Image 1 (spheres, rainbow, N blue to C red):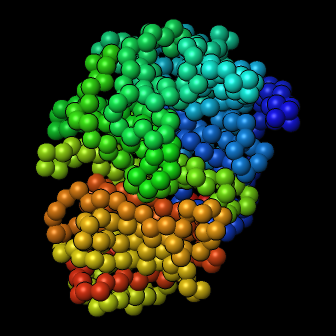
Image 2 (tube, rainbow, N blue to C red; image 1 turned 30 degrees about the vertical axis):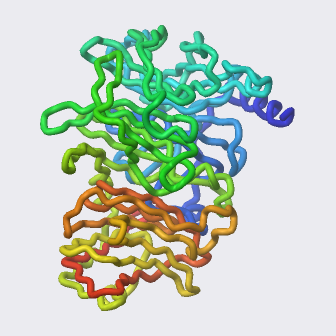
Length: 510
C-alpha cells in the first residue's frame, strides 16, 4: 500500500506538467488479439467510458485509464477524439490524480449558458463532473472517501483545469458514492446529477454545477441488486412523439450471465423523481462483456451508447500483452413496443458504413447440416459483418473457427426461444475459471422471421437480433486468428438473404 501511495504522490506532481500526444506506430495495432474496429488504448489498462460529449463536430471519449500498467491502478481520465465515432485519435491524458484522490468515473457537458461561470472572453466551457476517490480514506476504512468534483476546458476539450473549490458535492457517509452523470433539465433551468449511491440512485439538482441539492432516491427495492450499482445515466427517448425517460444502471456483479452488466428502467421524470413504468428487470446487453455503458451528451436527436467491453470477473487477466481491454462499438438506442412491453433496441451506428468493403450477398441459401461461407467467398477475413434475413427461424449456429480447431458458436435454441454464444472451446480460456462458458439471451418476439447482424472483430463478436431487441457482446482469444465461418443446423434450414462484408481496420491509413 505504501508503494501505491508513493506512486500516487509522484503522479500528482507530474500532473502539473502538460503532456503532448506522441505519434503512435501503426505496428502496435497488429499485435495478437488487438481489436481492429473497436477503440483500445495504444498501451496499458482501460475501463469505464467517461465524460462522453459531442462538441463542434468532435466526439470526445474519456475513459478510466492507468498509464503505468496493464492491470487496474490509480485512475486517470484518458482521452480520445473522433469525427465519426469509428476512427479514433488518442489524446494526452486529460485528468491526473491529485491530493483529493484518483479520478473515477463521471460525465461531461457543454455549459452553453455559462451557468458555472467558467466561461471567459466569450468561450463556452466544457465541464467535467467526476468522482474523486481518496485512497488514503479508503485505506482507513472511512465512509466518505468518494466525492464529486469539477474540471473545465476553454479550448474545446483539449486541456482541462480542475476547479479550485473541489469537491462540489461532499459525501454524506456512503462508501459507494460515485459516477455522476449530469444533464440539463431545461423546463426548470437546472442541472440534474444522477449518482450511484451504494444500492440505489440519488438525484441531485444545481443551477450552476457547484451547489447541489438532493432531490430524491430511486431503486432500493427495484431491479437487480446482486452487486453494487454503478455508472448510471438518465435521458429521454422519443416514442412516436411522446417522451420516455430511460435510467441506465450498471451492476457488478449480478448480470444475467454472471459478473457485470447494464440494466435499465423506463419511466417518467419530473425534475425531482423518476417513476418506473413497471418493475421488470431489463438488460441492455445480455452478453458478459458489456459494462459501464453510458451515452454521449449534446448529440441532439440521437442517443449514442458505448460500453466497456470486458467483465470484472476477468478484466485483469485477459491474455493481452501491451494493453488490456477495449470499448464496444457505439450503438444508437431507440424505443420499441413488443406486445404490452416497451423495450430499448440497440443498433450499430450508421457511421460503420464508412469501413464496409467487399459486400457479398447471397439469396435463398439452403443449409443441409452445414454451409461453409467459403463456397461463395474466396477469403474470409476478420473483422467482418454478417447479416442474415431468415423467414423461418430454426435451431442453428454460426461457427467461427481457425485451422487448429478452436471455435466460437453463435446460435439460436428454439426449445427455449433464446440466442446463445458458446466460447467454451474458443482458444485461450484458462486465465480465469468462468471465462469458458455458454451464455444465453432471450428472444422477445415470436415472429418466425428474424434479422440478425454480427459484428465480428479479431477477438470479439457483437450480436444484434430482431433489429436490436436482443444484444450480446462476447470476447474470445483464439491462439490463431479465426478464418472460417460455417452455418450449421441439424434440420433443413433456409436463409432468405445472407450478406458478408469485410470491415477495414480503423487503425490503417487510407
